[in-house]
Each structure stands twice: as structure tokens, then as C-alpha cells.
Length: 340
Ligand SMILES: [Zn+2]
Image 1 (cartoon, rainbow, N blue to C red):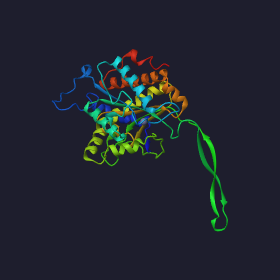
Image 2: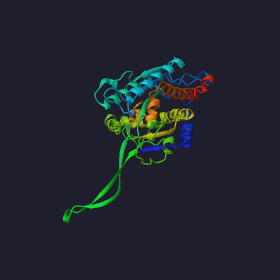
Image 3: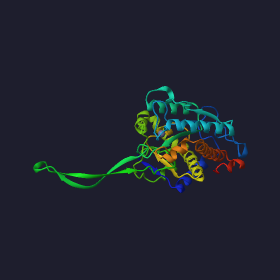
Image 4: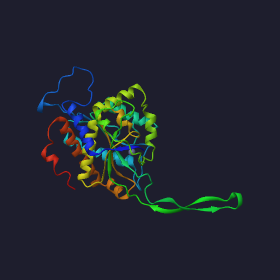
């Protein structure tokens, strides 16, 4: 899977442009009605009124698997804790969950139907921020796995059947990948080129581990990116939501780093996460850790681990909200909670 890694400097320069263009207002369209200019200074209204929390997968779609736990369950547990923490600190922020139990959102029997349902729910709820919670894998099943590599060749058979075949050596692979990464959607390259997106580097074409459930394929089936509506959404995303998506993702990864996690930074993916683009709001998919790595699986399943992840995301959310609303985060919130 292709992805583009953003140097922080590029993200921040893009953000600056994006933020300065609409830091005074609400980033999400709020339907019809007279559009009044945002009041100046401290009287600004809350920029974040509704947050969509999307625990990945669910029901028949378990997501990736660790040795003993499944992504759908871990994502749900962390998402529910995130909702509780947000409710406690920001009771005025409305939360909309795409699911609160182990079901495929919308009740359909395809992953595509679930993605469509998630996007529609987010849009109909007029979310101001979409947070999807997922767990990562390194492309190999959890536990010991065998890797074969060619170490030479030999000839087998006699006469005309004699042929050259590879000699393999097998060895046991280790799950070394760990840490977090946040994804934002990559807008259509053939479409409108916004300021921020125009500065991006080309994807390295790096082979990326995919969710074992084939998220990418289902995703392509769910959203037809060539339709006029999809093109319009792509342009809107670039103009209005890319900057804030990158901002929130950057803050999330910063907070993970402060907590001592290994951060893979903010990445863009053009497949597998189009649910982010289908949502007309800033949207970020957070990979909270690698279930394929047993050390991280234990962390992701522990109360302390989940609580820390929630604190990190909340610290980022607080900073994000304060930035959009044009004030500094409250002092007591900005300190302490990162300490392990
Ligand atoms: Zn996932």
C-alpha cells in the first residue's frame, strides 16, 4: 500500500496556511441559514461541537488479530474510554459513536456497507472532527512465523527434465514493528491541487502492512471516487479539512511521543481509509499500536495502556480545540497528564 510520509516541517507550513484561512470560524459546514461573521477575539464560538468516534471494524469484521485479542475489541474499549474522558472534560461536546458494541455499524454484512454507514452517520451528525481508532499489524500473523528466503540454486532431474530450482532456507521471523501512526486521507492526485497538498512528496511506494481483513478492497467498493460528488468532496477536503486533519494527527503523534511511544508520524494513504475523505470534516485514523507485537498487545489490552492512549489523544484534542478556538489550553490540562 502506498503512503506518503510527511516531514513535520511541511505539515506545519501547510497547517499554517490552512489554519490562518479559517481559524476564526467553524471548519465544518453547518447547513443553511445566514452566515454571520465570527465574533472577534475571545467571544469565538466553540469550533468543536460534535465529535464522531469510530471504533474500527466490528461484528463479523474482527480486524487484525494478536495472540489473544482482536482489533475490533481493543479499538472499541479504547474508544469508549476516550468518549468517557471527553465527556468528563468537555460535557458540551456532543459525541456520536459509529458503534458501541461488537457489531458492524449499520448492521450490514459487508465491510463496504459499514464504511458507508460510518461516513453517512458522521455527515448527518454534522461532525466537526472524526476520530477512527484502529490497531496495526506488521503483515505477519501474531506469534512466531516462518520466513523462507532463497540461499542458492541446484539442479534436479535427469536428461531433458533436468532443471534449476531454488534452495530455500527457513528462519523464524520476529515482530519488531511497534508504535503508533496517524493517517489522514490523501486527496485525489488527478483532482484539485490545494496549497497544502501541492507540497507533498511523492509516495515511496513502500510496501505497507495491511489489515488482514482487506480493508482497502472493501473501501474501494464503498466509495466511487470518480463520481462528481466524490470529486467535489475531494476538493472540499483539500480546501477546508486537510489542514485541520493534519494538525490533529500531528498533535496526536506528538502526545504519543511524549508518552514514550514510538511514533510513525502522520501518513497519508489513498486506500483503506477513504471513509476519512467521505466524511465532510477533519478526519484522522489513529493506529494506536501493533497487535502483532506481543509487547504492544499486552499494552493495548491493559487498563494502564488504554488509559494512557486515551490521555494522549485527549491531550491532543485539548490542544487542537484550543488552537481552533483561538485560546491556549487551560494550564492544568496542558501539564501532568503526559507523565507516565
Ligand atoms: Zn483496522
